[in-house]
Image (cartoon, rainbow, N blue to C red):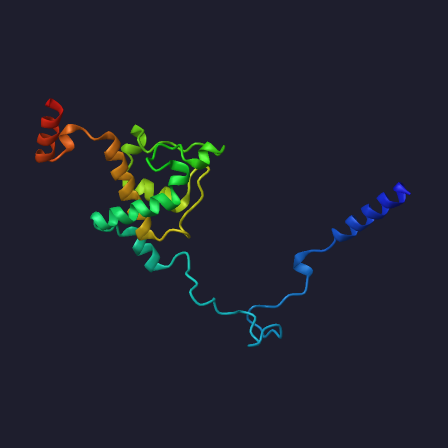
Amino acid sequence: MNRLFATLLISMAVSACGQNMTDQPKYNEYKPGPLFRDGRVLQSPVAGTVARDDPDRQRAAAEKPHLDAALLAHGHEQFDIFCAPCHARTGAGNGMIVQRGMPRPPSFHIQRLRTADDQHFFNVITNGHGAMYSYAQRVPARDRWAIVAYVRALQLSQNAGLDDLPNDERTRLLSEASQ
């Protein structure tokens, strides 16, 4: 009985191998086709479809917005949504996902990433890197630049020296420390 079943199974598998996609019936995209209501095989893109090489998207990705408090605040919000689960809210790389067993991303505070240019961060958000997948479809270009600005603020907050403070803040801090 088992031998009969095995023979039947093998004969079915072998007979299926003879089909080739080039031999299957199909419609030519430039000829009429009764499958669609308008009779055309080549359909127009769905409304709102954006081509990958769309010039407006490329221009938005190339234009770095002006750095101001509103951009940093928006970057903070976007960072907390998209980046903090892995990178943690401080950028140290020990977010909740890492605590649950996923690979640990590098800390934003290591020398290699502190000296990396802004375009590096933008490209990693756009294309992904290592275990991180691309956020190009989830995060608009302007928001990616806002996240980059906030990452720079995080890096400065963890690695700032006394000379980086404005004079009045430095004086106030020194007077408080001497008391």
